[in-house]
Image 1 (cartoon, protein in one colour):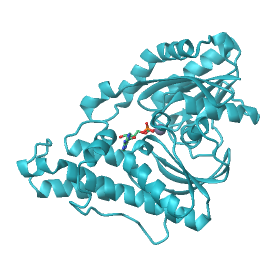
Image 2: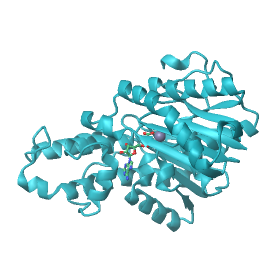
Image 3: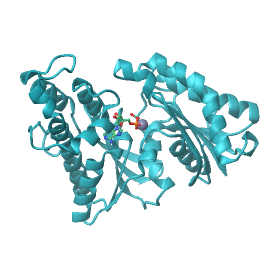
Image 4: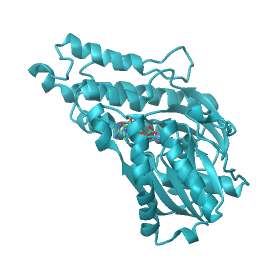
Length: 350
Ligand code: KG4
Ligand code: ZN
C-alpha cells in the first residue's frame, strides 16, 4: 500500500510517499525558515501563503523521488490538527481535493500522533511505552498503550520547550530558529556558568513550565549589561557559549527528571523521544544514559524524522486506515484538539 503523507501545520511544507506504513520512498521537507527569520518567529499569514505556493511542487517532488505517480497512490494522510489553522487548511484542502478528484481514501492525522509514531519508520517499539514529545508547540509525556490509545501524563503549563529555546536564542541575538544554534553553541560552553532555575512544580507533578527559565536567562543578561537588541558587553559576549550551555542544561535536566519520574511511577520498560527538540544532542545523550542506568529501552528517531515531516503522517494514516478509519470530505482543520479527541466538523476556528 502506497500512502501520500502531507504535513503543513506550521512552517514546513512536507510531502512523503510511504510504502506499507514502514518504508520511506520519499520525504520532501520544504522549510520556510528563510521567510520567518527576520521576524524572529513564525508569521501565520506568511506561513499559509508559502504553503499555497509550495504544496503542488513539494508533492510532485515526493512522487518523482519515490518513482511513482498519483495513479499508484492508495491512500492520502494529512495533518488536520493541531497547529496554525490557516496553514493546516492548505494541506487539508489540497489532500481533500486530490482524494475527491481521484477517488482515493484519505485520513486526517493528529500532529502529535505523527510525532509519537515517527519512530515506527525506523524501529519497531513494542507497546506500551512512554512517549516524550518535545517541539516548538508541544512538551508532553504520554502513556502510549497501543496505537490510538493514549493518556497525557504531563504537559507544559506555559511555553513549549522548543519555544523556550527559540525565545532564549532570540534574546541572545542568535537568530531563528534557536534550538539548533543553541545546541551547537552549548557544546563549547560550561553548563554550570550560571545556575538557572529547574522548575519542577509541585511534588510528583509531571507537568512542565519553561517560561520562568526563559525569564531567568533574560534577567541574567540584563543584569550583566546586555542591550535590548542583543548587543552585549564584551565580557558577556565571551560567555555566550556558557550561557547557552547553562540554559540547555536546565531545560534538559527538567525533561530528563520528569521522564524518569514517569518511567518509575508507571513502570514503563521503554521510552520514545520525538519532536523537533528530540534532535538536541545533550537531551538524547542524557535520556539514553539515565534510561540505560534503569534498564529502560530508549528510542529516538533520526533527526530528519524528529522535525515536522510528511512520512510520519503517512505512517499514522496507514495504520489508522488498516484499523478501519477513513475520513469524509467535511473533515475540518482544528487549531487546538486534544490527542484522542474525535474530529469535530466545526473545529476550524479553533
Ligand atoms: O517538531 P518541530 O519541527 O515543529 C513543531 O511542531 O513545533 O519542532 C521545531 C522546534 C523549534 O522550536 C526548534 O528550535 C527546535 O524544535 N529544535 C531544537 C533542535 N532542533 C530543532 N531544539 C533544541 N535543539 C535542537 N538541536
Ligand atoms: Zn511538530
